[in-house]
Image (cartoon, rainbow, N blue to C red; front, side, top):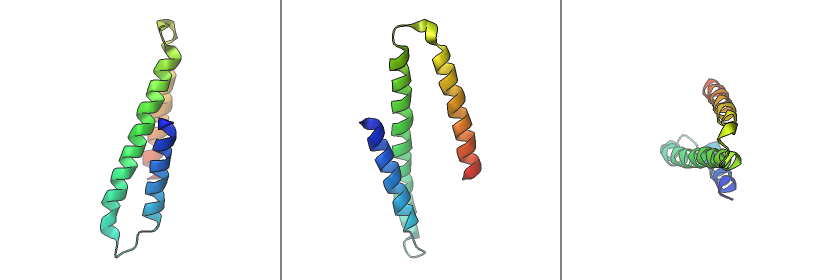
Length: 82
């Protein structure tokens, strides 16, 4: 449920930015705050889901490695597109 709420906040921020005009350009700061809140929520929730997936079994630490690589690839893609 928390993950979905993060997605909703990010989507709301994107919709808000879509409707910005030259007269309402100062509102970009509020939309950026919402975008930061939403993406942080998604990132923390996905890390918590990964920790739950591993649980007490510390042999499966490769899951963290795969998650870390996936996160880095996503961040590189995100930075390049922005």
